[in-house]
Length: 259
Image (cartoon, rainbow, N blue to C red; front, top):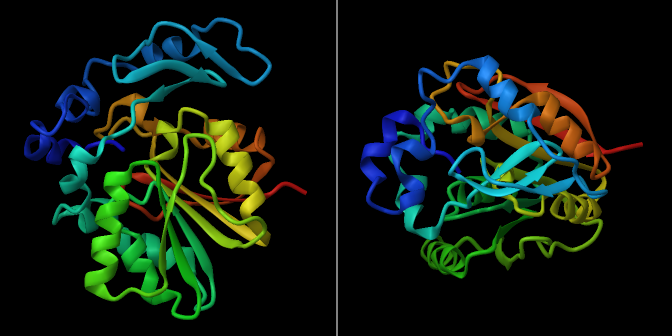
């Protein structure tokens, strides 16, 4: 998960992954240079993956369909997830409104972290539930503590893996992934598993910083374009159903099972 320019000074000591150079976009980095970097690739294997030296030091040296995968933000950066100005910077209230949740919905929050969205969605689905998924036990411990303090009975924590979020099949109405997908080191496997968890009318809400906008002060590796996101979701059997551009800096892309 990337760090907006205005926030990095508050968290730069948390981890090397949280340094300003990890996320902020250098002013000298041109669109042409980004395209050139994107196009320089060796031949991927049949799965769409390839290994080569990272073009960006904040990448893991693994590429999927031409996109370099970013390092995962560790639990050391959890304070940043709960920063006081996140609501204003990201328009989180707008995002929650645009999700159009129903009271009975079953929602999965993938890469839930500290539960910033988990505990904001919980009261919106009083007859449903929120499955808070993370691969880091430290994050799940934080979620459990918050669940107890808030008495959020309809929140369930789920320990996922890098290939599978461990969601029940055919049972999730909405899967929310906020600024986390670009860090999945097995995105194809993860999204296929997520697809299998959806109800027939289920949706995936993918939120990523806009790669098309050079004014978004986030390093390129932490951004995604609509075209790239649609390409990767298509490989997992999902099709783009709606593009919502109501957030200050991020795409909100809605996907459904491909027909």
